[in-house]
Length: 132
Image (cartoon, rainbow, N blue to C red; front, side, top):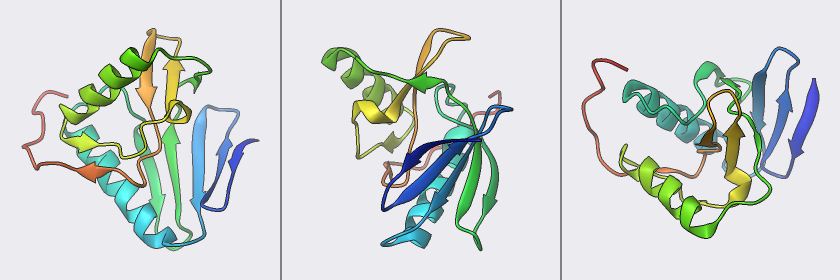
């Protein structure tokens, strides 16, 4: 397992089988955990193809396990970043931290993806996609 992030708010590990394990700590950790779980469920129900899939959520340990959405992006054109976060809003979610550190690149399909939804906002409730 490789530690890829260790801050005051979260520690993130990447497993050798491709899962991402995120543990929340610090200020408002239970609320940030609950929000990310809620947002990831919402986006999965709507068939959003460029965010991680939630595999596990442990509210007692404040830990989630997700699929891996690729590698961190070092450079991204400002216009392309705006388009990507606007696309997320079309699914009813505003990221609220639209920084390049929250964008990955999934080489398998050449897709930019968005990660880290602990501060995201649900803009509207829409029905789930019947054919995700």
